[in-house]
Length: 137
View 1 (cartoon, one colour):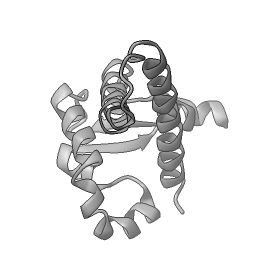
View 2 (spheres, helix red, strand yellow):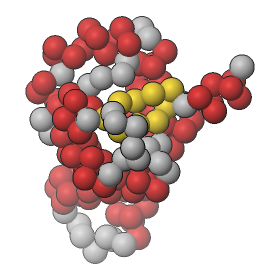
View 3 (cartoon, one colour):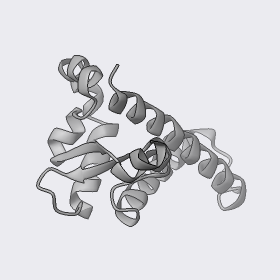
View 4 (tube, one colour):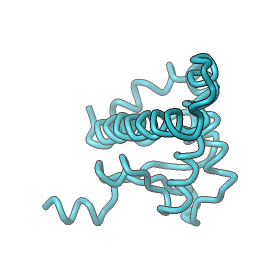
């Protein structure tokens, strides 16, 4: 398995843990009057994950908390900064359509770790963060 693949998987797990923790805090404080578990499972958690991902990628220049820890970042294919539209397209596509289109991407993803369906759709690429690599060396 390629280093980038391992880092992407690690970053995804870290990000999901952060979003789950944030979701629990929001459910217990802000949404404590909402008693329906269905609302929390179907609305709250996906909404927090989506907004958290978009906010982090926009505010942290293509990085998330998990991405920073694992040393990866999302960049635009053309080298320009990520646009909000790219970030939203990538996040929505990953959480919906990408689940059904992963099969042809799986083997190349394991080999080089850079491309998944959401990357092609949003015209993004995931690269190793060179600053993180220098600090590790």
